[in-house]
Image (cartoon, rainbow, N blue to C red; front, side, top):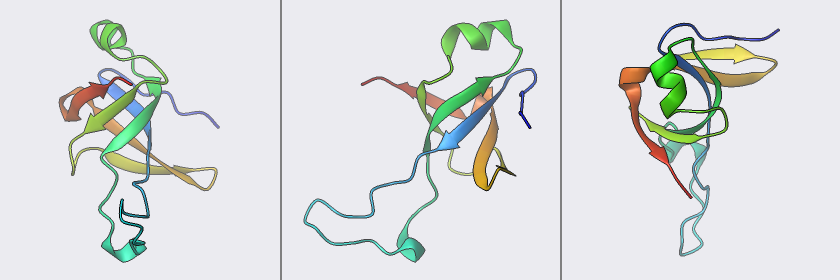
Length: 90
């Protein structure tokens, strides 16, 4: 099965935050926030959006934006263009 977002939407793979602090303390899963950074898996059909965001890009997205979708025992997120905060460049 494959998910292809429509219009101004993106399919992203949320990236988990580090489970250990800089000082070496482990953060339990219950204390972690939901991921706000993700890797773009697919871009919708909007031509302007395709010019700005490409598959494989890392993005920051709104904390409560998008809908979670589970496929092949993995959780993805479908977000709209308005939920994109920034493209992260290494």
